[in-house]
Image 1 (cartoon, one colour):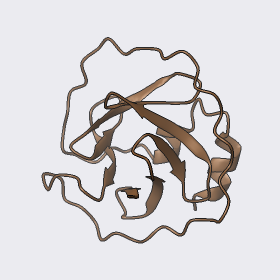
Image 2: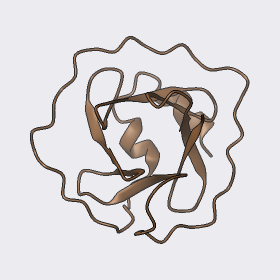
Image 3: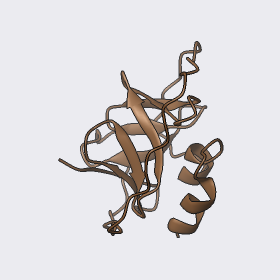
Image 4: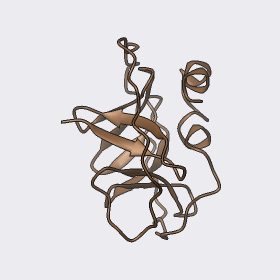
Length: 132
C-alpha cells in the first residue's frame, strides 16, 4: 500500500510503496526507513518517522503522511502525480547513528523537504528538478 508524504502547503513530495524506500513523485529515491529512522542512501541520518510525521533537526514538522496524527494543522492535500519511471536505488551505505534525542514539536518547519532530503543525496539535482 502506498503512503504519501505532504509538505506544509499540502503538496505531495514523496511516497513509499513498501514502507522502507522513499521516492519523490518523479521517481527519485531520496531516503529509506530503518527502525523508524530515516537515512539517506549514503547513510546520513535525516530524521525520525513518528506518528506519520517527518521532522527537521529542531523537531518541527517538514512532512506529514496520510495516516499522521491530528495534532498538527494540516493543509488540504494535493495529489502527487507519479512518473512511470523510478530511478534505480543507490546502495545503502553504513548508517551514521544519531545519538541526540529529537525534541518533537507540532509546529511546521521553515525548511523545505528539499533541504531535508537532498542536502546529502546523490540524486539531489534530479530531485530538485522533479519537485516544483
